[in-house]
Image (cartoon, rainbow, N blue to C red; front, side, top):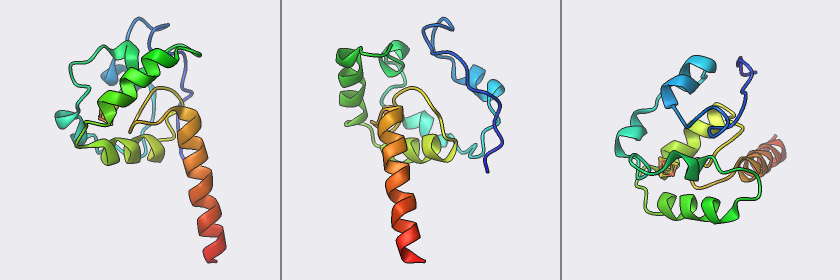
Length: 112
Ligand code: SF4
């Protein structure tokens, strides 16, 4: 089971996305964040990646950037391994990542 401090707030409620802040707030299980050097979102508006609920236009803009990203799989792995519960990572919303995780768990249960 992942040991993690409580994830609180959204980027905008905390005054903007700050990765180092997240690192200090969370006990990350997967700390391999080298993908960030090649991230397509490196210079993008952080608010795109942490849209308020219902801000589908911003979400779509973020996903469009993710589709051009060469490290998308690594980003998704990082988010899923760390069970990050908000923001767009690997081109997926938190809900989509949860759905993906549940599909994987079901698949693995079928293997046993
Ligand atoms: S997949 Fe999206 S959120 Fe992840 S590093 Fe690439 S552009 Fe950024």
